[in-house]
Image (cartoon, rainbow, N blue to C red; front, side, top):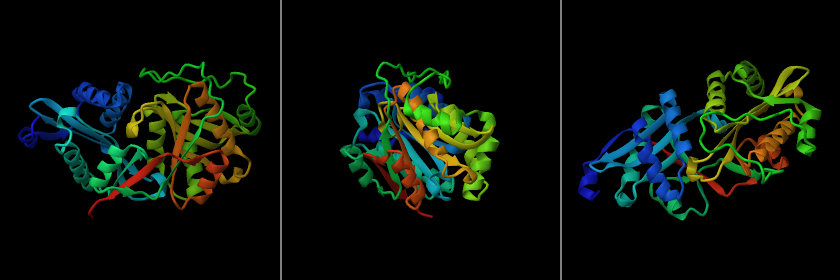
Length: 333
């Protein structure tokens, strides 16, 4: 597509029939297909269009580029709405012709319509072309801390079911293990796989922690953990039959240019009445054990800059500053 044809190209919403072209463009860049990831993101956008913004740039030669983003509200301690840019790409023959810039501007325009005040994204510190592109397009370093850690007890002989099957894989929580992490989980609380029916308990605990009623936010996070993850790994902790803590996490590959399966810890909470009883550590311990069995080697999360208590807890659990950097682009009000 030459420059004249590019000027005549059109921007529109990404559609289901664009999947093959998106996967092909991405595979040329990454050297492998990430079809399962894009299938899940497109499905999520169709399921909840109010929380996803996805654009396509098309011309005479078909799809020239794409951008996928989702709405944030309540994440990382912020009450402001933002758009998280999860994936952006352009066909090889139109690189340098401004496709990415046009897609980003369309995203920014839609963000303002949605009441979002900023764009957010991530990149690896050594992804120099992406870092340069972000700089050229108005992004700067964000205040949030990205932390991660290696998953202990990684089993090289285990087989991870992250090849794109639509059927979520379940963990055998009753399997015997001598792992110290499993022992901690069993000794402190009854750790189980999270169920969609436990939303009321999750909301109750979150309200006790934050003092706010964030029903819609927690409902969305639970839906992401249940529906958008390649493997279900979210957990609840029970003491005397009552749910007193939870951790919401996702296993996926694809967002922010990842090519290997990784886990993202979205939310963790323990009811204040059960604080300082190592229930949070037990939840993470069981999560690590399950991720190791799935051949997931790393887990990451982002912490608001003022949430020093959570940051200290994660550091105590073995997390450290990530090799990924968070970026932000404020939008005009």
